[in-house]
Length: 482
Image (cartoon, rainbow, N blue to C red):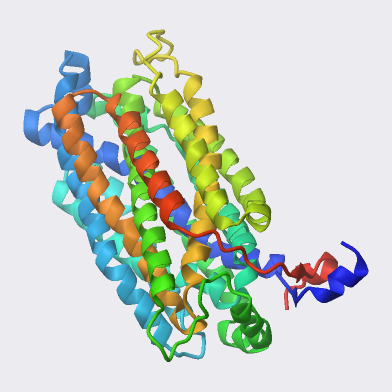
């Protein structure tokens, strides 16, 4: 870029150090979510197998009655969906409340702190009640964790666009998500050393509660630490005042069809854009959440492999995601957010098509008769992780692009209403589908169909409005923490 072109471009500053510190909020979110999604569906499968068949999932597996394990998946799906239903209701509420909150520590921070500490206290009780075969206590603890994480999640995610000008939000979201994936990766590493299948594939008398308790305790401690780092380094009120001019400039450079005006109803063009984005988001979250919810059971009960392989696969997928998040902002600057997301969906589709051909290896390698894990799935998760990173990185900035700074929490609520409604429906729908087909190979087919629908809706109905190019401050100034 020559000097004359540089001077002609508006100058905005993405502070990478500050953005990374905001990312500690997402670090805590994905840390908890990874532990929750990796372990809770298998807990539910085991505990409801006892209720329905008077046998643990291990005993059903050893007796050759594995079809019964598939029969309980609809209950697993309902329980997982009930938690998400509560989230669907609470996320918009907390988004609206935080928009209207004014305290000496900011409008988002009170919700982040309360949500973190209550969730952290309740989280370790989930495996404890499971170990005691107390289904009521376990489900109640799951519900409490999910409810207070919703208090935490919306305000935590809204914090980034609160203090980031609109043209810089795609790049900032990449930094935020990379921080989040560090949290998810840490939780995954815990699952490699504290192997869930070692607990599940063991008779009751030999089960060690600490195998399943430690990941939840460690996750709780790290969640609290991440919230405290956020609290002591990010001063909401001070930053909003200091960045007022940059945020106002960002509003003028927004990638929207018609300008945002809080004193007027949302324009038809912007409303149609919002609905199209949210509709496509609903479909791709249905696909992604189905895979995340059931992949642990898919590996243990269909591939008959150790759950540690799932954790390694998750790390590989996380690596693909980090690469995707690192470059998504740059790609969006060149081809626009629409085509970045469409490309991500197409890449994800390719990964799921490959997954359709994965089958149990048949090669016994574990002490409990476990099969070798198919290496093909590592490739699938790398591709899917990269593709969905392109999708997630640009979709949230597209939603909050359509509102002013006064309504970021509300529009963040819209974003999560779409994702959580998908996550409410998809576990139940797929659970019933598995119950009817009695075939675990339904999982990748289900995901593939939804990704195709999301791609079609998004590509046809969402316009590609490129953000105005800006000259981002670079060097030491971009790393300045003030």
